[in-house]
Structures are given as structure tokens and as C-alpha cells.
Amino acid sequence: MGTRSAEWYGGAGRNSYIHRAWMRRGLPAHAFDGRPHIAIANTASDLTPCNAHLDEVAEHVKRGVWEAGGVPLNLPVVSLGETQVRPTAMLWRNMAAMAAEELLRANPVDGVVLLGGCDKTIPALLMAAASVDLPAIVVPGGPMLTGHFRGVPLGCGTDVWKLSEEVRAGTLTEAEFMRSESSMIRSRGHCNTMGTASTMGLLAEVLGMTLPGVAGTPAADSRLLEAAHASGSLAVEMVAEDRRPSTVLTRGSFLNAVVALAALGGSTNAVVHLLAIAGRLGVELTQDDFDRTGSGVPLLVDLLPAGRFLMDDLHRAGGLHAVLREVRDLLDPEAITVTGRPLVDWLGAARIHDPEVIRPRETPLLENAGIAVLYGDLAPGGAVIKPAAASPHLLRHRGPAVVFDSVEDFHARIDDPDLDVTPDSVLVLRGCGPRGYPGMPEVANMPLPAKLLAQGVRDMVRVCDGRMSGTAYGTVVLHVAPEAAAGGPLGLVRDGDMIVLDVDARRLDVEVPAEEWAAREPSPAMTRAFAAPSRGWERLYVETVGQANTGADLGFLTGSSGHPVPRDSH
Image 1 (tube, helix red, strand yellow):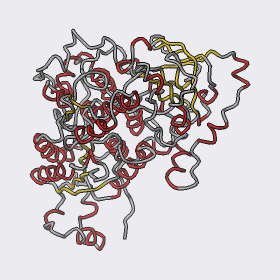
Image 2 (image 1 turned 120 degrees about the vertical axis):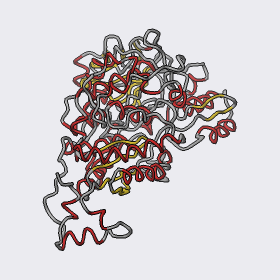
Image 3 (image 1 turned 90 degrees about the horizontal axis):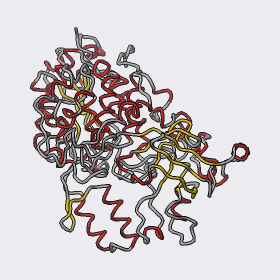
Image 4 (image 1 turned 30 degrees about the horizontal axis):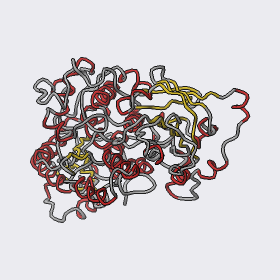
């Protein structure tokens, strides 16, 4: 079978001449003899600090591609820095996926190595790869090394939330808080907690899309560069074997990821990302699968935000494979990896080297972990909560709503000493879904009222149609669907309404008489705050984005188009 790139470069015609000639800036003539051309979809960017080292990783991928007889080609793609962009990186996940898909389809490449790290980059690249369906392999950029402050390890993200709350509570000075800043980010790499970046890097391997054993390797570890080299070589083999995402990413692969998500204590953001990736393939996966398959899985990894340790601890303790070996009986034995072999075949040599970090199956941190999916008056389309990051005493709770019509409303009033709020109150923030913000920001883990912090309160029930940072913690109900901006019932809640959360029963309800509820109108202050872009990507996004319970992809991007391009360019 001829390579795809040979359709561009083969022959003596004018178009083939043009395609070859403009590439002959150091490439020898035999680079165009039909050997595989491998794109390196590279999200390195100085404005995505967690991915800044990926240029070095790309160089090692290139060496592996050359060694295996391929031609490597660096392809910069849209890069999203979670810590930098406003209003939220999630607004552009779908754009990054669409742009990467189009570039891979439009260019003379036969396969692709996907380099990502920061939260949205690996999901966007997997969505793109699934849609174009060329042989693809992920090299996760890896977590940063642990920094320390006052002799204590710092979990980036999680400890930002904790330390900033201590400042607001008056138990940490602002000067000390500022001094911790340079200690938190110790090395290259993404967040060292079990946030979204770590979660999606690990789940990329569980899905079968990485070289087995690479996910979770710290960014500063030279073994990451060795794995990058091997991944480049494997990409060439994958082209020869026509091993494409559609052959690797099956329903079994996704259910394996759901099992792993629970055992790892991974980020709730994985729900919207896995649903979106599956949607690009037409693989049957629903929000309820996360509860059905994952809620009975034991939590085995003691990592922040749900535990004590950090990602380099997980790596030294045995890594992902040691975790998966403990739940091997729950994994689909037929789900394969980019090697062509089943995922479970790679787990035999794995061992737990530190049972404090990775618990044996017999002594889990939590018997039933995973993501709980709630339904009820306030969430007819569902909402999610991560019990492992919540306070056990709040998982069944009844309390009066304190409602905020926008993020701006929240910031303006949350620390008002006259705010009518008690520890039993339920904080409700709306207008933060995919359409309303736009982009579904990570604001659901609302800071607590200052006057309650001063009383020692450290958690409350919070309800939001937005998302929560994977590094965050607390009893937070999020991804409420439909969102307020899509006409969801969250838009009708008023201060004082009694909200009932019952995680065991999987319910989120409001105690308001049906007649009164039916007569209510949405809050004018809320509707005024909804996003109403007049042009550009934001307008396209708001008009076409789906809800959280289906992955928040754009409606016209679900499904795949494959890689054929029938028309010439000249």
C-alpha cells in the first residue's frame, strides 16, 4: 500500500514538483521515495508554560522517526495555557481540535505524534486525531517535580486554593503567600497534583494511545525523552500496520478509562473530555457510564486534591501500571494499545513500591470512588460530583440557597459581612455553562465567604453549571445540565429556596411548590450577564456548543471526516 504522502510527492507532474521542491531545504531526494512522513503536532508555547519543554521532546521524537525510516515534520498547533488565557481555556478546546484536525488532513502526512500536557491540549489533540483518523500516538509532557514551602510539599493548584483561603481567613500573611509563589512551580511540566493535566495524560495511556509505561513520567525525567524517541519509531510502524485511532479507541477503551479515573481519583473534567473524544468516533459513551462503571471502583491513589502525595510520588511508587494491575479484573481485556497488543498485557511486571501512595486493592482509601452523576429538579440533564474530594458529612445535605447571577456578582458580594449566609447554606453560581460564560470556566469551586472562613468553616455545598479545576477540592456539584443560559432550572432558583443534595440517592432537588416554580421567570440580572458575542469564534461557539452532559463539543464537529482530500491545490 502506498503512503498517503506519496499522493502529494510521487510522480513528475507540476503539482508533485511544487510539493517536493518547496520541501527541499535540507531534505534529500530519497525523503520523497514513499517513506512515511510523520507530523509532530506540537503544543509548545511560551504562553503555555506547562508545555514549554515540548520543543525538546519533539527533537527526540524526530530522532525516533528518522531511525525507523520515516521523515519527521514539526507542526505547531493551537496551544492553550490553562493558567494564562481568559475567559477560560475551555472556550478554545474545540477550536484547537478543529484546527489540528484540518491541518493534519490538509497536509501530506501519514501519521502523527501528539505532544500535549496542559489541561486542554491532550483532549484537543485526541479529538483531532479521532476525527481525521490517521495513525496517531500521544507523548504526554509529564508533571513537574514537587516544590516545597516551609519544608512542606506543595501541590500546584490545590495549594494555591488552600493558601489563598488562609490569607482570606487571616491565618497566613500576604507576604508569606507571595513568598510561596516561586516555590510552587519547581520545574518544567504540568501540575503535579491529580488535576486535569495529570488525569488526561494518564487516561491517554489507558485509552491505548501512548507507548505503554510513559504516562506520568515527570517532565524533567530523561526517561521521557527516551520514550519520545521510541514513540517516534512506533509511529512509523503504526503507519505500516495502518493502526489508526478508530482501531484503538473502542467502547472498551473508554470504559477502561472510566475505571482508571476512579482508581486514580482523577479530575471531573475528564467527563467532558472523554465524552467529546468518543463523540468524534461515534463510540457509544454517556455521562451515566461514569457512574455505572466507575462509582463502585475503589480509590487507590493517595494524591492531592483527594489525598496527600503528588505525581512524582506516584511515579516512584510504581506508576499507572501498578494502579491498573490492582483493578485488572475490571478492565476490558480486548482493548488494545498503539502497539497492537492489549493494555492488560503490559501490566504483568507492575508492582506497588510504596503502599502509602498506591494502596493495594484490599486496603483502598475509599471503597467506592469515581464520579457520581446526579439528577433531579435542578439537573434534569444531570450533574456530577467527585465524592473523593468532598466532605463526607455534606454528601447528604439540605440547606437554603444563596444565589449568585454571575461570577462578577459572586466576587462583589461573597465577602460582604452582611451576606445572609450560614455554614448550612448552599452557594449557587449560574451563568457559567458552555453558552453562558462562554466556555464553561473552572469557577464552580467558589471561595467560601470570608466571615465563615474566620469561623473555621472550610467546606460548604456549592452548585454550579460550570466546571471545577481538577486540582480543586470540596463538596461541589458541577456540570449542571441544562445550564442556566440554555433554559435550565438553575436559572429559576431564588435565595432561600431549600436545596437537597443526596449523593447516595444520586439526587439534586429544590423544595419549591410546583405552582410557584412554574410561575417563575429567569432572573433579569442573570440573563444580562450571559455571553452575547457579536462575531468571531465566540459567536460560533455560543451558537453551536452542546451541553456538558454530551461533552460540550460543537454540534457540527461530532463524528469524523477521515483523511481523504480529493482536490489538488494547483
